[in-house]
Amino acid sequence: MKKLMLTSILAALVALGTTGIAQDYPDEYLGLPGDNLNLYAVMKLFQESETLEGFERNLNDEKTKINNLDLNGDNLIDYITVTDYPDGNDHTIVLKVSLGRKEFQDIAVFTVQKFNNGSVQIQLIGDESLYGKNYIIEPIYEETPNPGYMGRPETRTYVTEIRTTPYEIAYWPVIRYIYMPGYVVWRSSWYWGYYPDWWSPWRPYYWHYYYGYHYNWYTHYYSHYHHWHVCRWDGYNDRYYHRVRAYSPTVVVNISKNVYRTSYSRPDQRKEGEALYTRMHPDRETRAVATRNESVNGRQNTGARSAERPSTTERTQVSKSSAPTRQAADSRPSSAGERPQVSRSSGEERSSASRPSVQTQRSTSSAPERSSVQTQRTSTVSSSKSQAQTRSNSSSAPSRSSVQSQRSTTASPSRSSGQTQRSSSAAPSRSSSQSRPAATRSSSSGSKSSSSSSRSSDRDSNSGSGRR
Image (cartoon, rainbow, N blue to C red; front, side, top):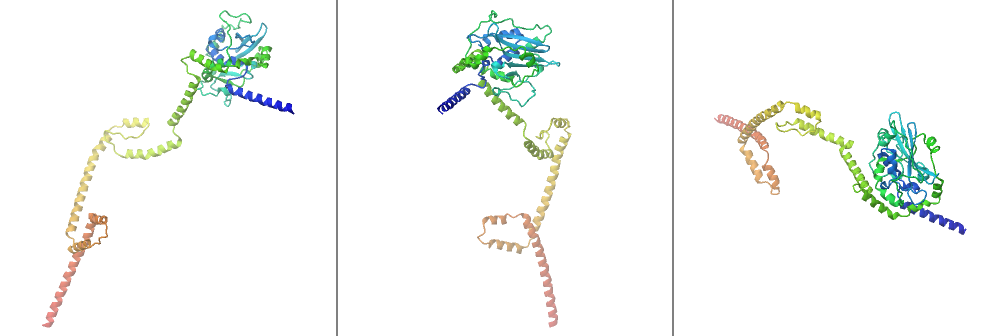
């Protein structure tokens, strides 16, 4: 029982320690010897090389900071050879190191395949002993057979992807070199104990120092290359893996014994590696600044696209609101020196610009004539109305005006001044309308009084004649 408890406690401690170590390492960390040869940097160097010989030399140059492999454990950098194995239009370019006189280990392999239409397809596949299975680097193609594949987690960085096509890869200098008619197959002549005079091995760096330098290059790496999950070349297993590939038992044993783990024991040197990058490339921005700029530019571009392309509802509202404005502007006559502020297309503007200005002159000349006629008519009508009002006011009955004056003087004091002002400021049309029936009534009352007086005079004459 006690043994079971101790075993469970040890397992828990190991799990916690493994989790803590995993949290301290970045996403690019593999925990395998391949960490000390960045395949992204190898692909970049291959693309920029002109020949395979120049590629091999630059790959082993200390100034490039690419090769940091020490597989045999002698505390010196291993020399990487480059050998091409052509088969028709297919090339298998193998990167290999010598651990002894008869012991070799493949590091990675370029698979280059040329099609009949002139396009070229390339991949860089890391050896499974050093990188694990299916560790494949390739250019970011414009079209991929599986768009849903997102790649490994380390490629999920905010960068602007620069896509390429197989036709563009055919124009890489080294690709054109290996497909030249007079191409002599390149096979490195260097081996264990026999290396070029210009090469002098150096002590390997700790992995954190190596990664600190390449950390700021990953923005460039991820913008041009990415991980892929399958090998595109059909002849990989038959023509390379089972026939050409070389692997070292020593490397397998060292991995199982964690011999290469000592390379990961100096995390404090990562800052020194980043400082080395800054000294060697002062004109290049760091990864943190590039990532921040890419994220900001992405938000600005999104805002600019949303501002340039309004939504469907906004476009509908704009078209509805501009319709009555356009009609009103078209209905109003424009002066000779002004143009209606209506948004038109280029075709309408050209047609409106080509129209003569005769219509404008006609409209401007007819406008004052119409206004003068209307002014004369208004003045005649107003004068006739004023004369009629004057006549009606003069012919109004005095009794009516006296009664109205008495009513206005005997009005109750409780009425407000506002009502008095309203009655006093009544329209002249109302007073004129009231004066007209008053005159009619006065004339009718006069006729009635004259008729009654004539009747009374007739009665008096009749009575006088009777008395006589």
